[in-house]
Amino acid sequence: MSKIIIYKENLINNLKIITEHVKKRDKVAVVLKDNAYGHGLKEVATICAEFGIKRAVVRVAREAKEIAHLFEETLVLGGSESYPDKNISFTVNSFEEIKRTPQNSSIHLKVDTGMHRNGIDPCELKQALESIVSSKIELKGVFTHNKEGDELSSALFWQQKNFSTIKSKVCEFCDAKGIKRPLFHSLSSSGAFRTNEIDDDFVRIGIAMYGYLEWDEVFGDIGLRPVMELRANKVASRSLKKGARIGYGGTFRADRDMVVTSYDIGYGDGFFRANEWIKASIEDGREILGRVSMDYLSLEGDDDEVVLFRDAKRFAKQFRTISYDATTKLSPSITREVR
Ligand SMILES: *Cc1c(COP(=O)(O)O)cnc(C)c1O
Image 1 (cartoon, protein in one colour):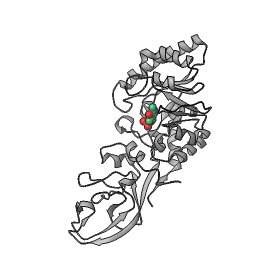
Image 2 (image 1 turned 90 degrees about the horizontal axis):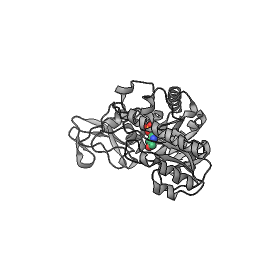
Image 3 (image 1 turned 60 degrees about the vertical axis):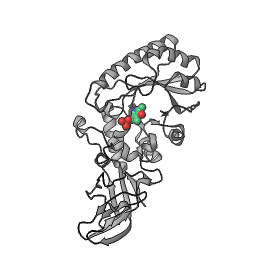
Image 4 (image 1 turned 180 degrees about the vertical axis):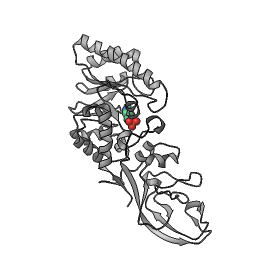
């Protein structure tokens, strides 16, 4: 069967680089949403907790329940469901969500500093804080998200400036009410690595932990190593004569006699669909022959096992997309093996 190898040593290497950069282990929240970007929620959460990470971020409550016992706090990013829980906090993006949140729940209020995707408008901050206090929900955090952490633009810096104004207003409000100041957080991987003195309480790190930053030209090689390796196994080999065509539509034609093998992975497993328009090669440079089908793909040669990718960023580029996309799409039903 196809499988995903998770290299523990590489994950720890990346966690070390990240914690050294932000200077403190408890300033790192690990982002484990969407099955830990396809790496395996429990597998990655366990290694992070062993390493000493105290905080995790997920997308939905179901994910939080699986791992909350490993961390001091798990923050759920996606709204909708929320309830009181001593280890789990929920994101609040709007007034409607504040209204819907049951009493005694812990929340992090998201503020829109320029991405214009989620979060309340900064001019409604005071009103939102009043509403939180009167609804008897606990304000554990206030945060924002950057839209251009990995672009060479000033957006990161003006968003940070907006956030610092928000911080002062929140602190002023809390001090006046005599309530505890919340934790502040705003930076994801790229923003964190573009900032040397991080004055937030913690950063939310996803992709860097898995071994990537999307824009090398900005960051240079900082020593991150890919955590995931995707492999597949042989189903059947055959010898083909020059001129034979392979797979649906027969879009690949052998230009010489060749040995061809099918492997047990396809777009049904979340693997990208290479085809006659999008040519792609696996880790060792061999081209995927013809169209990827739902459960199979074909390669020249007859190895029992092949590595499809270790460098997800290189692999993803062939499909004009990013490392996040290549790893996150991989089906949770593929076996994850930690080494
Ligand atoms: C996904 C996500 C992150 C992590 O981003 P990376 O670029 O993977 O580090 C951080 N914060 C929020 C709100 C996110 O949605």
